[in-house]
Length: 404
Image (cartoon, rainbow, N blue to C red; front, top):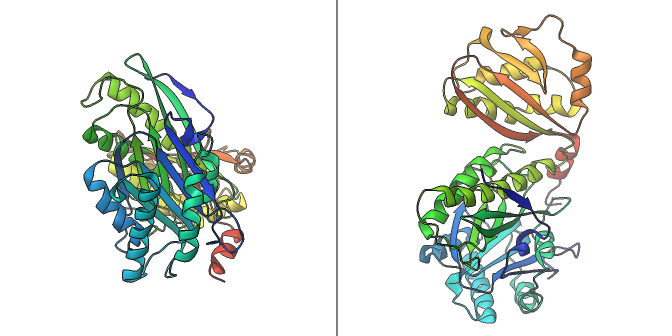
């Protein structure tokens, strides 16, 4: 296992990575709404996008741009998602990449673009055009926090993470920022997850590492079971670490992958912890499934159940709702083999309330900010996990008046 050293500074902890975030007036509240991440050296890129059939113009443009395998910049806006905006939206997304490319002296196709916010509203390009020169001028090796703030929508705080790992004896740095606390149950992406590294790595290997990391982190979180139209995960690798190129399976690639997965997992947990209206972060762990696919299906069913999530919010030890969610899942479930525990307190054995179960202790566990719901299906070796949060009245308030 790779030795992982946690660093301050988020994405700009990575050598050669500059970032900035400014207020351009897209958001009516005057908060930061334009972000830029820039590698001062040419970089290889890998990216993943929403699997929602409705995709924003920025997603479509970025999907075109990663075809070349190289990118040096990611420009992102918040407050307007530029989704369902037709040809006008595509022109706006392409114009953003051209302006940024021209200002940085790089081809527009080496600029990825992302937008988040309300669907169906045209991007106010007059404000964007005026803001982009200032955004580029503000680039700084300490600008990661500003970029992390500028991509937020209903998030209450920025999400950053960075690590240093030894890769075949050389130090390699990986950093990232993320946002997205609602409309969040990704499949192959998340709302926004922007990462960077100074590793020298082949495009094929970088793509494989990102997919594996996303599957184990961003693909294991849910706030409300919905999937955004703007989900984008991307990683830039600028090679400044000057390590021997990572291009095939082996210990060095595993060391690097462990660092990427550590950053992605921390960001994913931060997303769920800051879920809209959330007061609890809960890890749903399923063991003893017939196979891993069943374990994930069972965990997702529990993690996405509105009845389970409201019980989490109310600190109600209503284990029957968990049994219900298991039974309705696509996983094979045999009722009298199921056991359920909250942290280490076993409540259910053989599909029934365990004699002597201490529900008072369970209530005290449910009052803590973070805990584990551990489920054993008693059927086989399959296991997996999903991070979820509670469903609160605040979530309903936020989303009941999102556009008003």
